[in-house]
Amino acid sequence: MLLLQFSTSHYCRKARLALGYKQIDYQVENLSPGLHIFKLKPLTGLTTLPVLLPQIAGKPAAIGDSSEIIKFLESEQPEPPLLFTDQQQTEALMLEDWLDESIGTATRFIYYHFRAGEGKTIDSSLSSQIVISIVRKQYGINDASVKLASNRLENALAELSHRWQKSQYLVGERLSVADITAAALLSPLALIPMYRSQYPWLFERIAEIHQLCSEPLPPGL
Image (cartoon, rainbow, N blue to C red; front, side, top):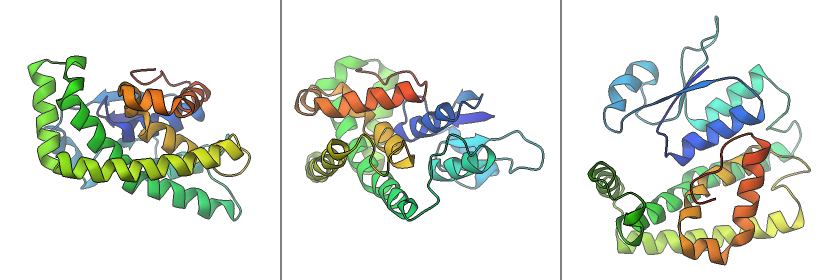
């Protein structure tokens, strides 16, 4: 299998965690932002990553979107499972969707705002700053939108803390798509000192899940 990705994308990290947890051999191809469109459009009709190329006879040539990738992996290799077969499935998928559509976006806003300011020293190269500038413009990242994202993230972390303190897992008694989605989409916060100091439990859990999935720790951990 071949995973097309941006190396720094937290949504691509989600796909890698799933592949690692299921112990599936795969390779990655890192694409360049902007130019990636020319490769993806003919494959999926989408412009977003990750995209998985199963390279298996009789299977789809390309699968776009991290959630669809996980569903495909589950059908190909059910063990160890990331989905459920009972009522917990609805809860896990609702959490995944909430994290994908709301919290992953909030993390992106906060991360790129940080990287354009006090976090600029992480990589002050011209190419890095150009990418950051493009992302900020593309998503409308500014002081006002970052404030809204920060409030949304604060509420999310309170909910995740409540769930992870009750149990080792967000849903049920085992790792699921909800856990790996949270671990991936919140991982960029590890580079931001304020979050590292205020939410140590979060990064302990992110590290544990990465280890379970045999995925290298995200930057900052």
